Image (cartoon, rainbow, N blue to C red; front, top):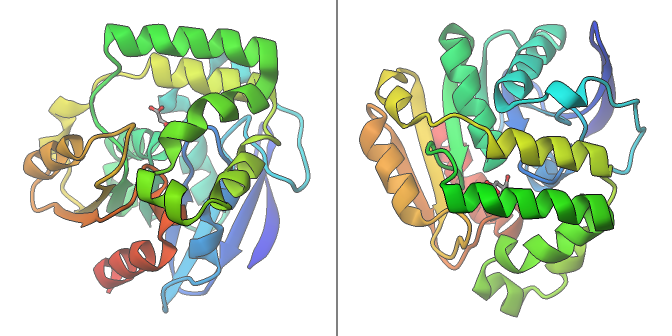
Length: 268
Ligand code: MLT
């Protein structure tokens, strides 16, 4: 696996890349960065080139670039960023896989540029917008990140990010997840919260998705209930759904073997 830098017109972006062949772009969830895909990048599916960029404002433990344009970030602008990135890394047309917030971005991306998406993987995500209650929760999260930074957000989110079985059987994973969240800047995290809070509802756009689509969910996901995934499967023509058992919101990290198997079989 290689750590690389793409010098885009308005900023530089760190990305991780592994494997050779057809491109698959991995879009991370909130409040993470490309490193959340390490268990997939260590084992790219044969014949595939896995490429994972940091979304604008998010960063891992590698080189940190100046954050630009955070005040106007939206889910649609993250998707536009990914499209620009894809052209830059010779992946104009790719399979796009997003987890949670990455799925919100993937749904925007396929709406903006359907001809550039060969296939879609929607993991632990939903098409619906936030409810009024959800939006109020985002506002509280904005206050928290202003007060306590990414570490405070990690503490608040961790109990919901990992499934009950994972917390019981893999207690060390909590620290690893915290380690993925904490390098992020408060400004990048705040921009992400605003983007998620204000994202449009995309339920009505689902029937117009015409690429092959795989939906993955965990049956212990406390953030996105399985019913949301079932609703997306029903709405997207021909979509397949894989339910991972004893798994929470971070399915690719909680059970990489099961996640990679589901992804690998579908990519075949
Ligand atoms: C994520 O994992 O990206 C977030 O939990 C998404 C959300 O809070 O809506």
